[in-house]
Length: 164
Image 1 (cartoon, rainbow, N blue to C red):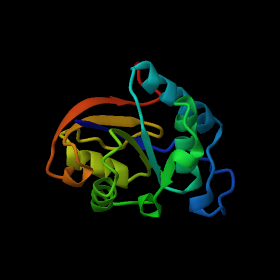
Image 2 (cartoon, helix red, strand yellow; image 1 turned 120 degrees about the vertical axis):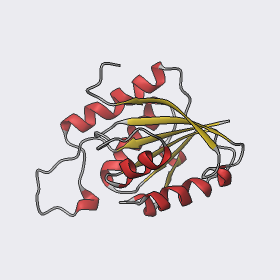
Image 3 (cartoon, rainbow, N blue to C red; image 1 turned 45 degrees about the vertical axis):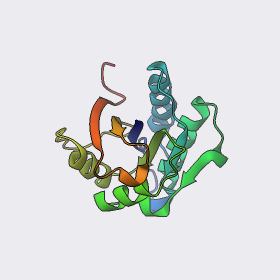
Image 4 (cartoon, rainbow, N blue to C red; image 1 turned 135 degrees about the horizontal axis):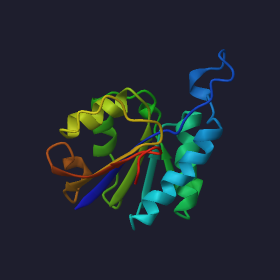
């Protein structure tokens, strides 16, 4: 049995409208929400042993905030360029390529792809994953390469403005 946490990056800054999308940083709310959501996840007694992120600045900073709360280091974060504006098929490919030693994996990425992927995995029918939201599910497999066909179970959906 494995667990997958899909995390949309925290709120990004639009202070510089000419800034390259890839390089957009977190805004003040994003800088507050990322560690708060990581702490909320940790308070659920949830372990994360593998962090996988888009290398875009806002996703990277969100993953770093989670890793810090989990007493991990940035060197332990796997950056996968294909997670930047990934579609559902790319999420499948990334997950299926992960090492089986990772039992509880958190993936940090972007909309609209992350919402589309969540909707492909469940009957959640989300219109949009809010910034810094977490969609968690169990995966009945011992090998990530079997992810696509493995039975999945919904665990929870949480986001900064929820009442959790």
